[in-house]
Structures are given as C-alpha cells and as structure tokens.
Length: 296
Ligand code: PEP
Ligand code: MN
Image: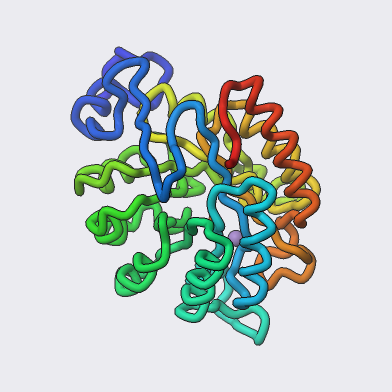
C-alpha cells in the first residue's frame, strides 16, 4: 500500500516499516560502520576496489595487485567466475574459474591486499569464501534470491551490485534478503542502469549518481559506485570516478589493467596503472573537500 508520507518518492513509509525494516535507517544519522579485513567502511570512508575485469593469470594478477596497492587501493578486484554476455569461448576469452580463485589467493598473499570476487552459483560459495574477503553479487544476479540467501548465510561480507533495470526500492528489497540472515556487513554498488537511450555509443549504461544521496537518505548501508562498468569507456572513467567521490560514494570500484586494449574481458573500460595512480591522487584531494578518506 502506498501512502503519502514521502511524497514524490517511490519508497513509502510502509516499505520502510514492513518491506525492508533492516535495510532502512532508524534515524537521520544512522550509517553502518564496520571493518572488512581491517578496512573501514561507512560514512567518511571511501575504500577503493581496483583490478582487472578477469583474473587472467597468476603472473598478471600478482603484478596488478602490487601496482594497485602501491597507488592506494584498499582491495584487489577480479572475476574468476564471470557472467559473460556470450557463451562462446576462445583461448583468451575464457573464464579462469577455479584456477582464477587460486591465482587470486596467491596475489592476495603476495601483495598483502584483501580481495573481492563474484559468486554466480551456490555450489562455488565454499570455494570462493575460502579466498574472498567480500563476495560480489553481480548486476545480473541482484534478484537471484536463493543465491543471495546462500551467500548471506556464510556471514561473509557481501557487495550487492544494483540490477541495471532495478529501482532503489527493488535494490533495498534484495539487501533485506541478505540482512535477514543476520549478516551485517553488506555494501551496495551502483554500476550503471539502463534507460531508453542507453546501449548506444554515447552510453552503454548510465551511471546513476543521484542514487547515492537517494540511498543515503533511506538506508544505513554503505553505497559504492563502479564507473568502469557504467560507462564501459576508458576515456570517461577518471572523470566519472571524481564525480562519484564528489557525490558522496562510500567506496569506488575501478577496473585497472596494465595493457587495457589487450585485457581478456571488457578491454574498452579498464584504465592503466599510470592513469589509476594519477586518478588516486586527484580522488584523495576531492575526498578532503568532501570529508571522506579515499583508499588507504
Ligand atoms: C564485474 O564487476 O566484473 C561485473 C561483471 O560487473 P556487473 O555485474 O556490474 O556487470
Ligand atoms: Mn564487465
């Protein structure tokens, strides 16, 4: 039932009270604050998750881990189990799966940096949980409720990407599925949405910057942003990342690869080491103005 207590919003008072009471803020200043692998999450912090789209080899992921860490990344990102849009595979365009998780583990110890990686199937949750410090639920699985419940039951921290066609209301409903399992370390991630004019060269997805303050109005959960997946275009990533920090993101996910055009997956969107290094310096300055600590 919709009531008029929050005029103009798609979230009503009855949603807050009975559909996602755990995800909803209890008062204006209610913001969750927690540690994951020693990294602080919550208001005033903007940890940076950086790394390749896919974990391609042990050598490459170790090199990326060291480089992003030295530039101030808080976590290494990288997919081993990938929701690839097309089913065909080649030597290069091929998920690294179990091997990738092993390589991620090696990179994690080598560079001493925590890791985040995607979970797509319930049967791989135990394997991935051994290595990942955060389980990533991708945009395509935001509403895969059995997967959400199974991930949440591990009590591992979870990053829930927004379904690209989903409202904030849908998203908070999905977060509630995680919270109801008693799991408190839940992070939301905006990664671009679809609109009638998207999926053209000017915008593959549209980064919804406005959802950051909107989410912070309704939920205490940290909300991070992923400009790389939203715009899918390397020349735009740094500018958008700066806007993400300026709008108040509680974290940032960025694709970084030493040789972006030759990345196995999504070669158009990764930035290189130097671009990442320079960007981190700018983001820290913007963070100072916005009273948020960016990266390590
Ligand atoms: C990713 O982060 O590697 C990914 C596949 O993202 P999304 O689910 O946002 O497409
Ligand atoms: Mn991708």
